Image (cartoon, rainbow, N blue to C red; front, side, top):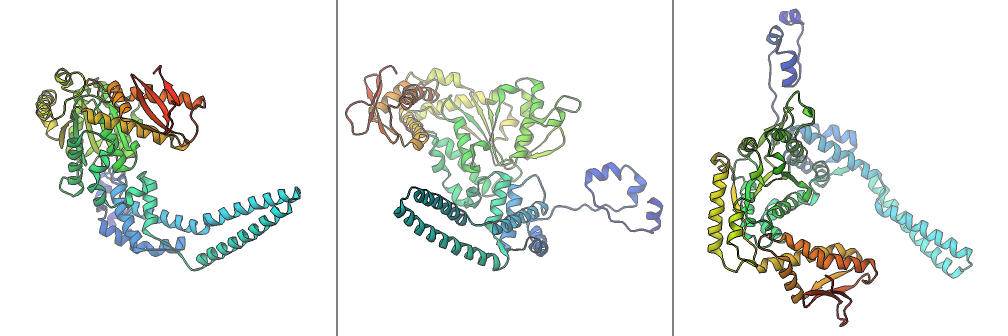
Length: 519
């Protein structure tokens, strides 16, 4: 090609990626000189909308649908925000293509009402034949009338459906696009539909439904996320980065789970990295992937692959102080630029993640200063003193350039007796939710609540001891009673305290339903 190109005998336009250009064209200097490279950048959101409006007639003709302007706007904006591993306009075009295909197929599929009536007709016919064989003609006659009504309704629905099909092309609306983006990204449709401002405004209220006694922590996290969503911070950085400090069992990990569920609609949006697995220098490469020449090179890294597959997530680095120092060098880039390159060369985008690091630094001091039993009410000064000691220890453990990049460092409060009572109610509420399909419910008396709190709370271990206490005194005996048939379906039980033991009674019944003397 070189002589013909140099004499201008042929005119050529080529399209390729930068990697392919470097591999095949750039290494041959003489060939490279004969071409003028033009870098084609991804279009902006506005440009992508114009591009897809220009392509609209082709997709309308192919799928035999009508694509609205709202659907195009939603496809571009939602794809730009939620589908991070591809470029505009390609990803928005694919969303429109798939939404159009789904709309067309839905129009060709009978509505659920028609299928339901068809099944009902079959059931009535079988029942009618059974009565005819048994010579119960009155019942058979009533079923024949019911069959006529159902068949008439079936014909009416089919005529309406045929009219809708014959009216013209089906319309691809904004809701169809939202459904496709929801299926692609795994973010529930309700989270895409809910207005961002409304969701952020009631964030504290929603988190307090799961996190008891940590008002400062919930408020700090909510403020940082609102700041990010309002566009008042660097768009390249993660949505938020936090270090959670404080005693064990006070809700540090639970707050991370609650954030994942509230913001991204699913607790599975939490990527949990236990830093005790990354204490050795050689184990650091597992996060990013093994280097070339080592086993597992093509598999990618644990952290980078998880975030690539689920870019909207909460990343929890549990017990960060146990990690090898090289981990912190890697995190500097994530905290500053919101991106990380894995061993294969993929650039992984962290700008839609929330980074949370938990640590038990300073817990030895917390254990010494806490008196046995419960933290007395109103110990604000004591908490401030404990907070100062914990933050001093944090500064000794981590380098300033790492701490400077963290949005907020939050020290969790030790739990008071009132907090523990609230957590007991929360845990019993979850048991009731699990028993809902059997219609069984448990309502504790005030004395039973106090006894559970007394047995379950240890200042050193926080609320984790409560789970074991409730399992021992509530779940185990109740499960045994259900298996033995001592608790009927639909029973309403009261959990009462008798001395140092617990008793289940049926509501409004004086005699005990099940005594728990051994527990």
